[in-house]
Image 1 (cartoon, rainbow, N blue to C red):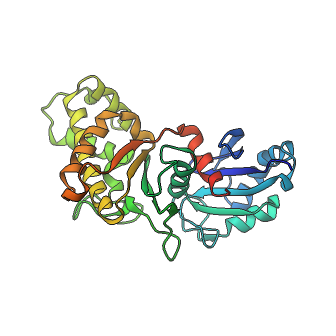
Image 2: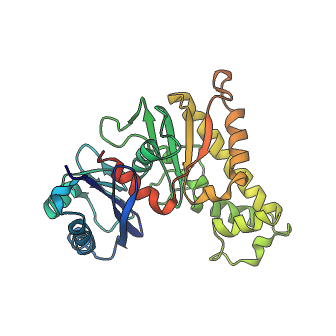
Length: 317
């Protein structure tokens, strides 16, 4: 009997990455296209097909594939739809699973990108032997996937686990995409960290900082990290503030699901202890005694370039 393969597709705001994965979690071949390279979802499917179909043919054709898994913003697992995704050109409700199945003749399933990351950790990552954990993705935005008793939490409508939009500061920063004030994503994403940097620099005009060598346009989470590693006090203060807010939020999340671990993934985790130390301290400071020193905070060990494809493909198995 021939080995069955899975296809993992990750729809990001800029790029859509896809690849063929075996049961061992090895990506055998992969490629990418621009997510918004065309104005219509039909154009997207056509572009995807032009690169993915030859890969499918190379590995024995559609009958050799167990399924397609896709991680995408605002994806509904129950319906196989992408619904009102703010950062995609395709408006309204897109019946993506149906479109994929019709084009490739392979069963398809969807979940949101952060849930796909959590399933990837469960199947292939640091949480491989865990039944209860939370994955938090710290990138341009903040996503989350919650695993309880070995299963992803979807809720009655398929959209459970939007922890990035939990309010952590009353009447706090405006999140332009949602209209919410004080959401976690507004503070602990790469975008939020940049906003913190701008605020602290503007509120302390007399305080010297290496960050003042950068224009507003050049100020990013990466430049803050570079300055922090050189001992810049304001850059370090920015990470302390970001970690404080993240840790407080993690303490709240621990209360409702008592996870064995919280797995952090995404670009901001490259900051290492600059982020981890204040985050861990703030979490422990805000936990009930019964939870103290019980929950691990871990960085994902999956390669960032591969994790999204692996997570999406794990939906198949």
